[in-house]
Image (cartoon, rainbow, N blue to C red; front, side, top):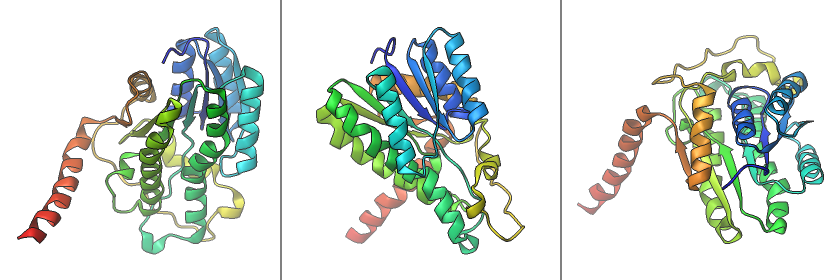
Amino acid sequence: MELRGRTTVVTGGASGIGRALTLRFAREGANVVVADVDEPGMAAVAGEAQALGVKALAVRTDVTELAQVQTLAARAFETFGAVHVLCNNAGVAAWGGLETATHRDWQWVLGVNLWGVIHGVEAFVPRMIARGEPAHIVNTASMAGLIASKGLGVYNTSKYAVVGLSETLVKDLKPHRIGVSVLCPLGVETRIRDSERSRPAALRNERAERAEPMQLIGRHLSPETVADMVLAAIHANELYVITHDESLEPLRRRFERMERSILDRRR
């Protein structure tokens, strides 16, 4: 897909991977729409994109609210006429074992990580299909959507769902010439460990103590490195964007256990 002159939308675009994706698209010559709840942050990113010579629009968007994502889609299509790449990237993390997870933890994390992606699909895909142009959707999951980690149960649940959604969506949208990629990184140098900064007051836990973030295996990549990988996946129309070589062994062990469960049953 040629991105020059096309339009891209990135949720969670004010920082981290979202910021890197937005600026990477801008360097490719694409117009960009930056969505986030961090208004100063997204405005700054839009300004950086404009400095690269493209048009940029910042739209405050809480992805947990379908109406706001519908407004984002409407603004993007009204301003630029079409959307060719949608990155459902907004995400948060809550730490701690499932035995200590609160209902507010579930509401918050699933609201952003899973419902945010669902709302993106609901708001943008019908419009993309109606335009009839080649397009691409990138859903940010995590290696935690392929390999479960202790102490990240709520997050794991949300990301496993995003992987399954993406694996289905790529089949459903193939006749419409809309590709799908699912981003599954390990550690990236973002502010995900400071997710509580954006938790709504109504969903904050009443208890004061908080679990410490888990230490992930492997290196921490820069958001810019990850953005380059995403761009390559869009160009190649690849489903999986697995960013770390360190992921290979845990993935192999998982599928070997599945294989053994079938082979052992045959004996």
